[in-house]
Image (cartoon, rainbow, N blue to C red):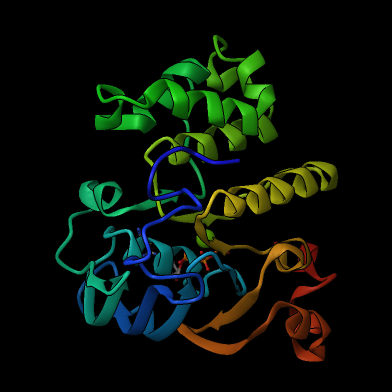
Length: 262
Ligand SMILES: Nc1ncnc2c1ncn2[C@@H]1O[C@H](COP(=O)(O)OP(=O)(O)OP(=O)(O)O)[C@@H](O)[C@H]1O
Ligand SMILES: [Mg+2]
């Protein structure tokens, strides 16, 4: 499925980074909410173009903080964050979408009182007035037919899985090149988790690069290319998704132990 627009299309001009080049690069990032309380204590990771990368880690490891630091919501004290080679450190959070970065927060990611369609309109932001909004809407509804059926319904009245799909769809409406998802499967049944991650794969097929933070390690790694384990504010393990799934240490900590951690 083509989105018919440059950032997500398969027919990107050759001048742009080709598949496999770094889309998002985080280097030695030290960050925290308040001065002198570092939550991230030197995190490095890289997501190549069109990769799906998962960050795993126990509660409080700093996974959400990492995503928020990339999104410009947590002060970065040192290190670098680059999107397609361009530093994001001076970019305010509300300008991230115009740089091609979209972020679906762990909680509070839909406007409950607004309809599905209104949520998607807000996601489109400035693109709403420009040409292509209708096409974007059609493509998002094609990806999530359930949302097309429910487009007039208030988002707050949807099921948890449907709401999560609104959140992802809303982020897609901003025409991102890189999408970050914080615990997209939280609170969903195993069947819905499987459906949601299948959608994440479909989103990648649109040409996007995806960074996922998840406690549901098995489901996330199953659709990912690579993963990192974050603990105590540092990335501790990096590997191919298959290798991480087979790693006894990762297995003991994150696979099949979800309830204990949750
Ligand atoms: N707004 C905030 N202000 C101050 N400290 C915070 C804030 N949000 C999180 N923290 C602290 O940052 C640390 C990391 O939290 P973070 O939410 O990044 O963890 P996480 O890995 O996402 O955990 P979870 O799996 O529970 O979502 C925790 O010690 C937490 O208390
Ligand atoms: Mg979190």
